[in-house]
Image (cartoon, rainbow, N blue to C red; front, side, top):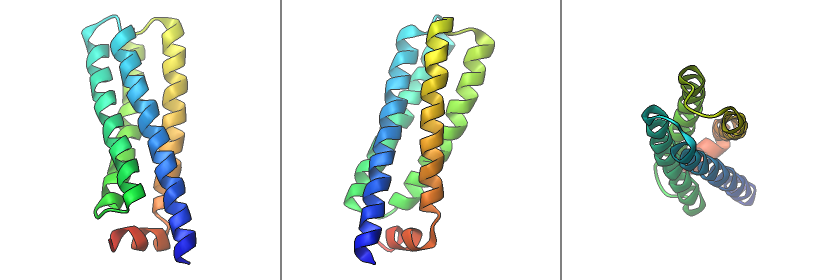
Length: 133
């Protein structure tokens, strides 16, 4: 049973590293391509959230304490902030149209994977396995 849980934790860590990487790269792209300060500010927050996501992925690999809570909250924040950012970017016209399409694509990928991570973390055996550390 422990090997199966360790495999699931490894899968979660990989998914979390992917989410963190996508969000960091999205933040860097927002900083680079935004035509106004609000877009650049959103990019900075994205990059910070992505770094926290990458940290959560590394902590999942190490199975350190509080990793369950950190990972859940990081992914919730990524989903909420990324979705709200896309709405704000669209409303303010902060990105040229071709970069906006890329932004929507990256956000969709990050949000879907973050939601999958949250669903997997809610499984009782995995939750107990990660919380007891």
